Each structure stands twice: as C-alpha cells, then as structure tokens.
Amino acid sequence: MEEALTKEEVLHVADLARISLTEEEISKYQVELKKLLNDVEKINEVKGYDDDILIACWNNNAELRKDEEGTMLDPKEVVNNAPRHSGNYIEVPVVISEGEGA
Image (tube, rainbow, N blue to C red; front, side, top):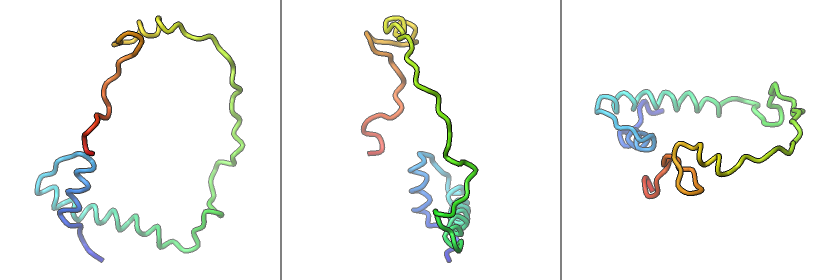
C-alpha cells in the first residue's frame, strides 16, 4: 500500500476545495490525506456488514404535524421589509456564479 498521495492528487483535492496550498502543505497533505483514505478504506474490510441488519435508534414512526391553512403575508409588505429588492423580487447575494469551475 502506498504511503502518500501524489502531488497532483493533493492539488486536485485542493482545487475541488478551492484552497491554495504552499509546497510545505502539499508535502504534509500527501501523507495526511493518504492516512485518512486508508482509515476510510477499513470500512470495506468489515465482515458481515449488510444494510438489512443495520441497527438505528429510529423506528420510522415519526408523527408529523398536520398541515394547517394559514393567512398569507402581503407580498408588498414582504418585499418592502427585505434589505434589498428590485420591483417584486427580493435580491440575494450570488452563491454560485455561472461559468466558475465549469
């Protein structure tokens, strides 16, 4: 079993995480990330694992509240109370911009 990831593999992970690394950090993560992956791989070595016998503390009889019809908020009041708005639309910050990373 390999003891470290390649520099390219670490840079690929850093690119996915959108972080920049120094050469020192790259060397460190080549070993640290490989250790982490080796530990995760141990899950595949568990004998007798089967989804049918998976034990969980949830018994699937959750009681959900009944849907109740309520009064609608006035759309103009909602828009006017928003920090930023344009016409009938509430403006929100861009979370994912088109073209980045694609």
